[in-house]
Image (cartoon, rainbow, N blue to C red):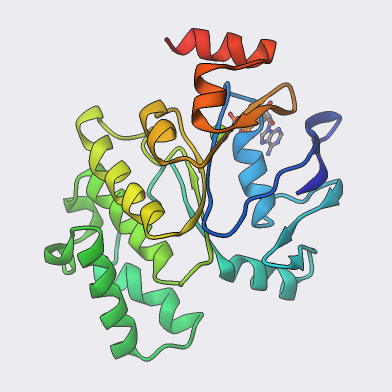
Length: 237
Ligand code: ADP
Ligand code: MG
C-alpha cells in the first residue's frame, strides 16, 4: 500500500498508509478498536474502495473494474471473526463449491483437495458434518481450509479468534501457526499477543488513522517508541 487514504464520508480512517508485506511474511496488525485495522484488510482485497494512493498485490495494481477485482480476490483468502460457513451445506461441500464454480475444478479434484485440507486442519473426520454440529473452533478451522482451497497467495485474518470461547482459541491459532511456518504470506488482525510474539515477522500497531509503530515483535511489543504505542500496550498488560 502506498500513501493510501480511505474515508467514510467526511471521516478519514486511513490517512496516507504505507505498508509492504513481502512474500512469505507474517504481519500482525494490532491497535485499539476503531483504528482502521479491518478497513485496511478490506481495502487490500477491494471490499472497500480507497480514495487515493495505490494498492499492489503480487505486482498488479488494484483497480475497481470487475476483472481486476476478481483477479485480486482470487489471489487472496480471507477469514473473518464470524465463520461465515454455508449452514445448509456439509463441510465438504463448503470446501468444494467455489473450487468447482470459480476455479473450474472437477468434482473429484475439488474433493481431493478439500479432504487434504481438512486433514491439515485436523478435521478429516468432519467432512460430512454440518457446520451447526461443530464447535466454533472447528467451524473456524473449516473456514480457514475453505479459504486455502482456492490456493491463495495471501491470507488475511480479521480477528479470527475473537468470537471463540477461550478454550477454543488455541486450536485455531495452532492451525495459523502451521500455515505461517509453511511459508504462507499472512496479514493477521488479532489481540492475541502471544501469537503476535511467536508467529509475526513484523508487528504493525495502528492508531490515529495510520501506522503508529512497526517492527519486530520485540521492538513493537517490548520497546514501543510512540506515545500511542505505549498507551495501547500499557492497557493490555
Ligand atoms: P478496527 O477494525 O481497527 O476496529 P475499523 O476499520 O472497523 O476499525 O473502523 C475504523 C473506523 O471506520 C471506525 O471509526 C469505524 O466506525 C469506521 N467505519 C468502518 N466501516 C465503516 C463504514 N462502512 N461506514 C462508515 N464508517 C465506517
Ligand atoms: Mg476490526
